[in-house]
Amino acid sequence: MKLQGKVAIVTGGSRGIGFAIVESFVKEGAKVSICGSCLETAQKAVDNILLNYPNADVMPVGVNVRDTEEVKKMVEQVVEKWGCIDILVNNAGIVATKALIEMTDEDFTSIMDVNVTGVFKCTREVVKIMKARGGSIINTSSLVGTYGGKMQSAYGTSKFAVNGFTKSCAKELGMYNIRVNAVAPGVVETDMVAENVSEQMLEGLKQMTPLGKMAQPEELAGVYVYLASDDASFTTGAIFQVDGGLVL
Image (tube, rainbow, N blue to C red; front, top):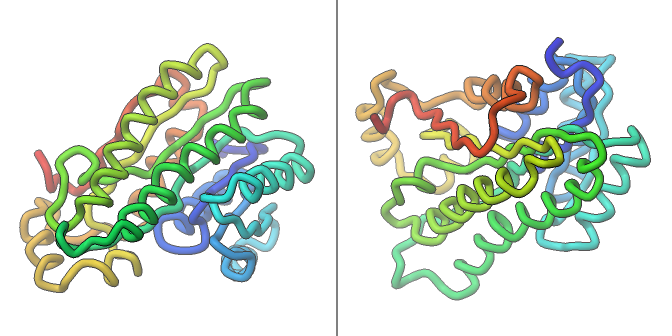
């Protein structure tokens, strides 16, 4: 198993892409802290994992990634339970599809706080532990973080920032054998997408995608497994575009 004995934190791990990542990590032998926006959702995800993988070593954590003290507590809980952190997946994120002139200060700030500041805070606190033995940090970006997106000025800006943060951290942290990469999905069939993208737009995107469909969350999880594993020991600073050929 590619991740046997490794300790992972997955933020936004209670549903969608995050839950698929957790499941794939568990299959590959990792011990996983499933982090949700509240303990209740994280516990439900743990319960679902244990139904199918009764021997899985998983732990629920409720954390607001915008809150420094909660992020510190999350890291402390993981280290107290397993003694180290080998993998961090910064997957927690929010989106708003709204015209620029209709977007409020609060809309923009909220997205930046979760998608950028949250990634910064989780990475900073985990690196304090990870420096001792190296590890892998994987950030969830998006195609709009490279190409932009109509009605997604705030979300697109946040994901451009994630890409810049990924590359900057890769340069800074390589000396500690910490690899930092990002995965940029295309259109994925998740609750968040369904709530923020119209059926008409989704149908258009499907038709533009050479594979002719939206991705299922589990179709992305293998990229995260690769980046978390020793197979990617010489891979850092990369943004992996996983979009079914939508942008070629």
